[in-house]
Length: 161
Image (cartoon, rainbow, N blue to C red; front, top):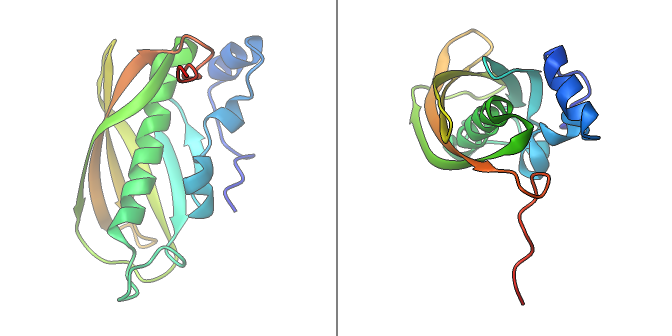
């Protein structure tokens, strides 16, 4: 679950990160939480990020897709887009997430598509549309990320002791 081996990246992105010795597929994965939830990133570029998530295992007590699960999918996809926009010199940190839930989903996969609303030097905003297998909109989300200088290869400095 959560394997990212079939993600389609633009060649220039692969080349940029490979030159730095960074595994782009691992870096732009769903992360630990997304992996536990079964998020699969299918396609990734600064212009469009597509991912799926199973409904099963991500439901609330009524058996419907949990709104928080939709938020995880939206933040994952929007963050990947923002990171790709920022390039290897920036890291993306989510600062605002808004989700509107339109309908429930009880089974199958939901698919999220993140597209940019704004791509600037210090922030990037992505709209994420999550749909069920019949193409019906389940959730509309908007994520804004702050783009910070990567500094230490994208790693935060260790806290002072």
